Image (cartoon, rainbow, N blue to C red):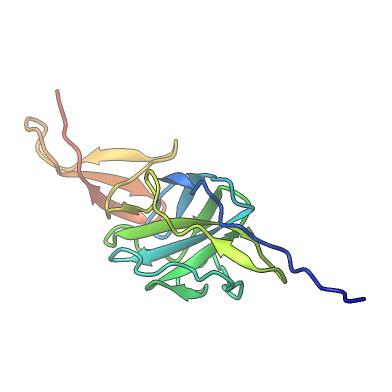
Length: 173
């Protein structure tokens, strides 16, 4: 009699995560959200300055995530900021006022001691980038006009806990 050990078979997820969003942006952090696909989990990579250049490799579950930018595993020129089954992460240690950040979410199936398979396809708004100076304000933000009161201007400023930053805006009065 012969016995065979059958390894768990992991299939690639067929539906990739979609619709990445950036919210609650400050000078040094932002929330990243997405709509989950059909994988058992997601791996999220963020890169400063340009698009992510590589995808996770099937069978590799040695990536580590850290929500402090540049502290997780390096991947595709960026860093892994999230591994899990959720749909949002807050990333810190950023410079959102002058740096464009690129984000890509990769669905995966299985993991841990089993084989892991990633969906490395792109999808609607995945990947997505966030240009510098695109602010989303909480209820405590105020805008201060810094130009003459008789002209329309793109010279508006945001007062927030971290200081004052100029933001693009057009005034009508």
